[in-house]
Image (cartoon, rainbow, N blue to C red; front, side):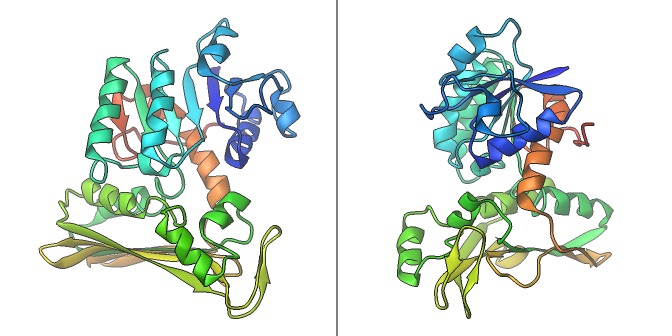
Length: 331
C-alpha cells in the first residue's frame, strides 16, 4: 500500500481524494489545509465518497505527528504560483517525502524562473526527494504528448499544438480563472493583475522545446477575451451577450527568427466544439486529433495519481514529465 499525504482540499483536492479512495493500492492517510473551517474534520465531512477515517490538520507537522507511519508521497493541490509553492514543498521535504503538485508554474520553471527552480532543486536534493509538477495542461496534452509524438520524426520543421475546450462542465475556479462572465472592462482589469489566464502556456512551449533539444531564442504570448455573441451559461456562471465567456491565448517559440512551436489555447463557456490537436510538419508530417477533447479536471486528477510510481523511482531533485519514467494507470 502506498500512503498519501494530501495537502489542499479545494475542488481539485477533493476530486483527487475521491479517485484515491477508489484505488486498492494507494490510500490517503492524512490531510492538510490552512482553511480553519476544515481543521479537525474528517475527509468524509468535506465530501462524499472520501475516506471516513482521515483527519484534516492545519500544518504538515501536526499531520505527521498524528501518524505512526511516514507517507510515501505528498500530493499538493494549492496554488499556481511557484514562489508561493516553494515554502509548502520545503515543509514536506524536511520529512523526506517526495512531492507531486498540480501547480502549473512547476511543470517546467527552468526558463521563466531559473533562480526559483535552482532553489527548489537544491531543497529537494538536500532532503533526497523528487518533486514533480504535472496535470493535464500544462503537463501532458500540450507538451509531454507532443514530445512523445516527435519520437517518430526524422526531421521537424514546425509543431502546432491546439487545445480548444468548452468550459461549461469544468469546475467553477477554472471558469473564473478564464474570465467567464466578466465585462470587457473587468476582464482587462483582471488581466492586468496577472490573475486571469491559463497558467502554464509558456512553460509548455519550453518543456516541449527542451524535450526535442531545441534552444529557443524567444517565446511570445498573447491573450484575448472570447466574446459572447449570445447569452450562454454554465451551472454556476451566466454570461450575457458582449461579456467574456472565456479566454484565448497563443504562444510562439522562435529560433533564428523562425517560429518552430506554436500553441493555441482556447477555453470558453458555450464553445461549440472541443478538441485537442497536434500537427507536426516534418518527415513525416502528420496530425493527431482527439475529437471532443479531454476533460481537464478528470485528467488532471488522474495523471497526478498515475505519476506516483514514476516519482517514487525518480532521482532527487526537481523533475518534469520529460525526466521521469513513463507513467501508467494505477489500478
